[in-house]
Amino acid sequence: MIALRRFPDLWRRLDATVRDLLLGLLLLTVSLLPVLQRHGTRLGGVADRPFDAGAAAVVLLECLPLVLRRRRPALCLALVSLAFAADQLRGYHLVSGVALLVALVSTGLHLQRRRRAAALLFSAAYVVLAVALGRLGSGEPVSEFVTFYLVLTLGWGGGAWLRAARITEAERRSRVAEDTRTAERARIARELHDVVTHHVTAMVVQAEAARYLTAAPDRLDQALTAVTDTGRRAITDLRHLLDLLDPGHGAEARTPAVGRLLTLVEQTRRAGQPVEFTEEGAPAASTGSADLVAYRVVQEALTNALKHARGNRTSVRVSHGTKEITVEVTTDGAGSPAASPGGSGSGRGLAGLRERVDVLGGDFSARPRTNGGFLVRARIPAGGAS
Image 1: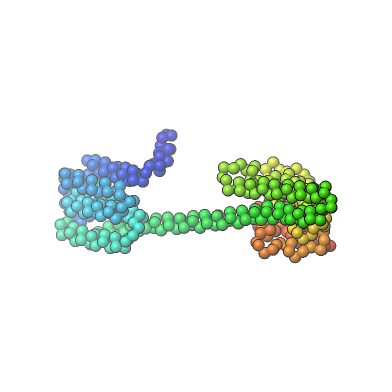
Image 2 (image 1 turned 45 degrees about the vertical axis):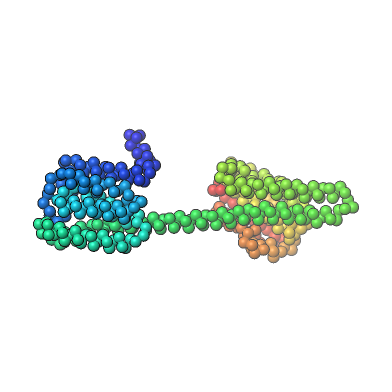
C-alpha cells in the first residue's frame, strides 16, 4: 500500500524520455496480447488479417516513436501516422493504433514551430488514406471518415489548449514573481530609509553641536562619543537589514524587539532632543512583525522631530495589548509641513509606515495637533505575518 502511494512521486522523478519510453513499451505489450488482437481502431472496413510479422513491425512502429513525443513531436507524429496507415490498409486493426491520438495530443502540446504546416500536412495525408481505404474497404460511408477526423482534431486541439494554458500560467507566475521582486525592493528601500535617515540625522545633529563645544572638552568628548556610538548602531542595523536577503538567517536577527526602543530613545536624547518614554503592558508571546513596525513608527517620528522640531519636548508612548500594539509619538511646537504624511515626496517615511500598518490591518495617522505640535499614532495588530 505504501509503495502504491509513493508511485506517483517516483513516476514524476523519472526523466520525461524514460516515462515516454515506458508508455510506449506498455502499449506495445498490451497490443501483443492475443486476446486483444484485432480489437483496435477499424477504419474503412478492410477485412481482418491474421497477426503476422508485418503486424509485429506495425506495432513496433506505432509504439516506440512515442519516446520522441516531447523532443521531436513532428517526427513522432509522422512515424506513428505511417504505421497507422499500414495498420488500416493491411487490416490488422491493432490496439496500438491508439498511439496516433497520443501523438496528436503531444504534437499540439509540444510542437514549437510550423504548427500550421504540420496540421495541413497531416490533414492531406488523412485524405489520401481515406481515399485508399474507400477503394480497398467495403464502401464505408464518408461520415465515418469525417467523424474519425473530428476525433483526431479534438486530440490536436486538446494538446493546443494545454499548451496555451501552460503558457498563460507561466506568464502569470512570471508576473507574480516580478511583482514580488518589486515589492521586496520597495520594502528594502523603506528599511534603508528608516535606518539610514534616523542614524545619519542623529550623527549630523551631534556633529553640528560638537562644533560649539571646543571650549568644553568634556562635553565635546561626550558629543563625539555619541557620534561614534550612533555610527556603530547604524552599521549594526544595516547588517540586520542585509540579513533580510539571507533566507537561512533566523527570525531573531531580522526582527528588532520592541525593547530596542529604549536604545532608540536614548540615542535621540543624546542628539539633543528631550524625549519622554512610556511603555505600558507586556509584549505578547508572538507579535509577528508588529514589533518591527512599532519600532519603525517610533524611529521615523523621532527622526522627524530631530529634523523639524529640534529641542521641543517629544513624548513616546507604547501600549502592549493582547492583540495589538498602540504607538503614540507627540512633539510640541508649531509643527512643519515637511513632517506631513507625505514626507519629502520620496514615497517613503511616514507614507511608507502607513503602508506597513495597512498591510497588517491596523490604523495609522500623522497630523498636526490643534494646540500645536505634531502627533503620530499607530494601532498595529499583533501576531500578523512577517
